[in-house]
Image (cartoon, rainbow, N blue to C red; front, side, top):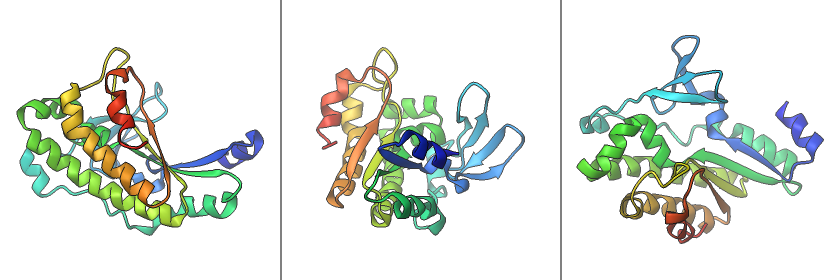
Length: 212
C-alpha cells in the first residue's frame, strides 16, 4: 500500500492529490470511461497511470452560465489529508497537491478550443480561469487549516520544445492565476511547489516571480 511504501522508504514527505480522492470520479460511464468532478468525461488506458480527457462540459461560452466548479468545502475532500496530518505531522512534510487551473481549463473546454480562445475569446479564458481560481483559493485555505505545509500545483506549461502559449498569453492570462494561488498559500504560512514538464525556460522567470 501507499502507507507501507512511506514507511519502507522512509519518505521525507507525504502527498494527497485531489485527483486520487474517491469523490474525483462522480460517475462511471463504462469499463473505461468516467465523469470527473469537473464534468469532463475521462478515458482510462493501460498506457498511462491516470486518465485522458475525452469530452469537456464547456462547448460554448454560454455553458459558463450554468457550469460551476464542485464545492470545495465538502468534508470528504480533507479526510485523507487529516489522517496523514494526524499520523505524520512533525515527522514528514505534508503536501496537498492539485492540478493547475490552466490544465483543468484544457480539460473542461477541450485543449484545442481552449488554445484558440486565447486568441479569439480571451474574455472567456479569463472567465473560466476565474472560476477555477476561486475554487482553489478556497481549497488551499481549507488544506492549510487541516494541516498541509506545502501546496503543490501540478500541470504542464510546455512541450519538450517550447511553452504551450506565447509569453504574452502566459503573462496576461495564466501567471496571474498562478500568483493568486501562490499568494494565498504563502499568506497562510505554506510553501508552494509548481510541477511542469517541458522546456519552460522562455517563461521560467515569470513563474519564479510569482513567489514560488
